[in-house]
Image (cartoon, rainbow, N blue to C red; front, side, top):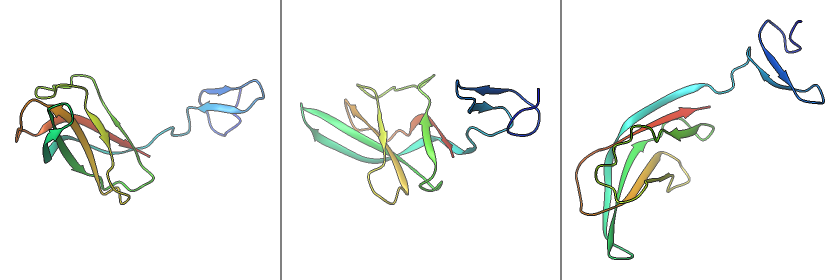
Length: 117
């Protein structure tokens, strides 16, 4: 059977015959990635008597790109809780990861970031 979207491959249709998946089309396109986050700031006065440390990466992929971080094999050697990730400014020129820590460190944070569009 020939695919409705052109070319050969595997297609998946819903109950209304709409194409839900077509192996001839890119679902996502790999744009880039990084793994080593640099220290950005340290806040020793985080609520609850804790401290918050933040690391950053340049995000040069534009506002149309999406990011995903891998939680597999993450070595959170200095964090007391799961890290948080996101943007702090509208320009989206930097992406940040932060976590509650026991003490300030100058270590880089090793956490894979994958960017797709």
